[in-house]
Length: 320
Ligand code: UDP
Ligand code: MG
Image (tube, rainbow, N blue to C red; front, side):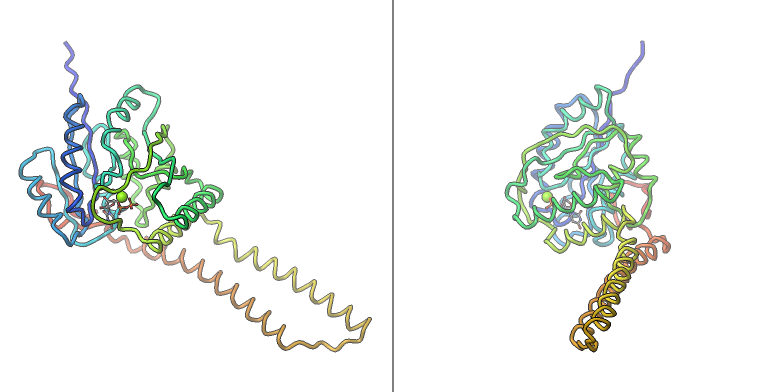
């Protein structure tokens, strides 16, 4: 008789100041997981929280053998937290979930069924409404998805969340991509594999506050574009070409004016405008190059993505 072992799911949960949401998340998620025909592990990553998140995790880790917590030495950001979770996940299927219940655990059985049915390597989620989000944020988000899909291979669906369940093989590939500047939404799309997209209604945070203000999101979007596209780098060449063309046209106009009307070339103001305009474009293009150089600089340093200061499990890799 062949004994088949039950499948194992690893849930990766980045937590940054989530003391209010964490108990709700734990209860609801464990409730769902217990009803599923699988074993599971919960990997919580304390991303340098300044509230009681760590002591809550210590308690959970002591009471429940399914819980692993990894506590960073400082706040390294959600990307690093997800990466640490992927590195330590041992399940056949691995999911990333926010600790604030915006990623409903009740979807997990359906997601697992889709993967077990064959035909797909990951089930990703996206919100089909942006209800409850500020209008300006939605507008910028839409533009961001439009631009990044046009100029890169990242293939990101509008409204995509990080919440997804993946086969271990896919996670192994993600872990092997150890670039320092991580933009997971892009990485998920870039590596390919067969992804099933699941729509769901936007859910509000159960407790606590979002960690993303408008400017943080804007920076994140710019990072995404720089990480996945070289198109901005060619902007300088295009501007250069355009300005040369304009210069030729202006020259022709000035020569014709001089020959036909005998106009002396006047216009101190217009000269200054042109100088400032060209100066502006040059600085803008230098800035773009600077962004790429800064990223390359950080990559070449090969600094660790995160440093784990504490965990309830022994023999874990503390730095990667
Ligand atoms: N998070 C993190 N490190 C950070 C910021 C956020 O680990 O520096 C976690 C946070 O605890 C939550 C998830 O990432 O579990 C998503 O954050 P949030 O809910 O604030 O983002 P939003 O859902 O508003 O986009
Ligand atoms: Mg959230």
